[in-house]
Image (cartoon, rainbow, N blue to C red; front, side, top):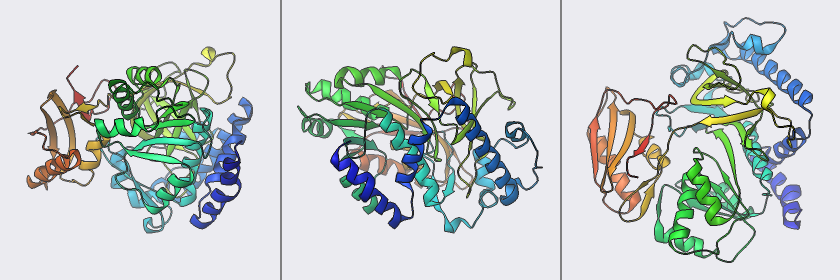
Length: 439
């Protein structure tokens, strides 16, 4: 361990936790310990955590007050709980929290599935997600204080995040609308330098690789790349590995604060079962055999302020059958074979700027008159935005969104609007937010 890393872990970050009433370092250490458990110990820990959250929900959460308690296997008891869809969360938010919402920290999902929900948690519960994510980063060879180039969807960095960036030696790059010359200039500053980690949305990391290759930045290298937020398509991974000469470690979580699984030494994902109980179900809500694709239904096991039990997030996935587990693996968590994701295409405009799915979801976050949307690019010179309007729809909202698109791009880019009654989902069952037909 580096000296600066020890300073962060033993003094600086624990002091920050004390001031902010968080438990970031405590969670990282806890998960480092879990990684050493045997398979049987992980199964028992996960079982107890599931049992505890179900008892808590029935005893303290109004939404679940009619669920009867059962003895025995909590996995069987779980089946008596209804599947929780996003529309149910929006409709019953007050009965899903244990305490008044005003006493909790509010988070809003990205809306990349077409529907946004608000999730509430305590600062300590947020620390769990942050601790697991950082622990995943450690699987790649990253350590706290190692130089990091990170892409993200935050338009502004508050004082706490700015302090974090300084302390953890992080260079944050906004991935909403990336301009080729600016990306090239940033990357050129890393030419010939070593000891950096690259992390962020895989679509944006792939854009970095494309720009580096186009501008001949052959000596920009990273020790490792860590992806989160989007699906890591094969072409993204190939671009990053080929151009930057580093392995890519994919992680799978959601903005609701559920950290599902991540890759380490295998082509498969380790499922964080002490934190999340994962069901793969068919269209009727029945669990499918391992090896079959189905809808992902999640129960977070360590958030008591607003338990999410059997939460249908809209993704589809496949668990790896036990008989196919590799003989040698570094960890004893169960394995997820693959995640079936949406094609969150990158849209490129003629001037060389890029727009990812998160560019658009953030714009529509503050536009409640639009229930659902899809961005389609048929030619380089314009995009068409299909939208489903709410009853309170005001056409002036479209002009406001278009103005925001132009403001973020720093140029005027043609937008055609198309009002529709239905936006078909992809084969995975999720709406496709961005669809580029230019290949």
